[in-house]
Image (cartoon, rainbow, N blue to C red; front, side):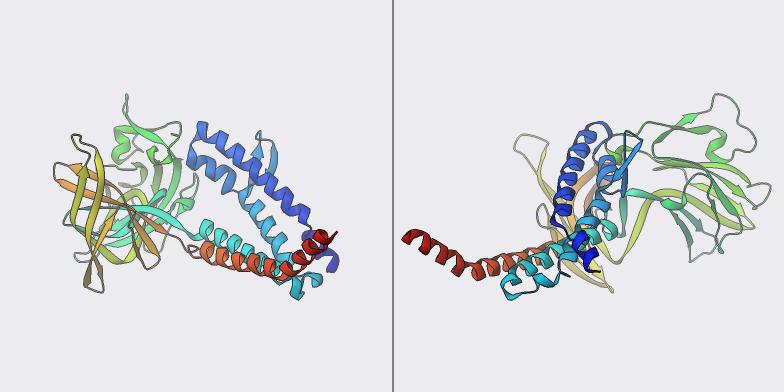
Length: 374
């Protein structure tokens, strides 16, 4: 055990991983020009393995960070480090370990999205920036809609989706990260239903900015009935809802941004913007809202550089939308479970550095005195 700890805690491992992180930073920055920020981040920093030249496997950002964490944590198991004169070093290492744990929590559990709220309306969910979902809504009951939702990892080509609430099965025929709707030039086969009778989904190259991509799916309904069995298509932002009546039950099929429902609602009371003098360009904008929780409203003003923090969420004034029916605010919503880790670890490391300096100060003063006498 001592030999294992000695090897995995060797300082050279930390040095090599830091150098490799620098290499990943350079590669990711260069790739950003061609594939965009989000794709570059996913490929180099949010991955466990990357492929250099599509041939050679190499550690991705997450594996590299895990190695650094194990290396730092293993140093705390060395017997020769647990001495009073090295108390500052121990505390610095603990702070660094907390920082790495916090970054891991943030990378794995945090989420980002936005809320678009019309003036006078309210919302209780956040649309994810990047992930999609297929929602199947049973609208047969008068006072209750039953939702069955399949997240993006399940929407892979060839996957068959089923649930106890559904009397039919769905097979994913195609999933496109970016596509467009194209009118058919020839009559479609009888197996195509809904939008797919007159249109087709055509895959496009990915845009550099991921939010500009328009995802879509082609799916097949099976085991429903002869009338509804067939191939359907959905695209993000589709204006006409895909519906079907199966076994005397009415269903709606929606392909949309993944929704995270909140334990509270936000109502937009008033949106204000200030323009640069003599221009139509917004200088600043703010949203006066009601934060409604347990039926109790609380007025809050969200403006640029002054976000709302509530129940682990942070809501930033991101943008706004102007239309013929009025104004709408766009709030960026971030759920960061590791938000406090950087603050705590910075304080811990600062205490460790100060303590290390305090312990070694008499020794340094003695050396300076002896050097001065000589």
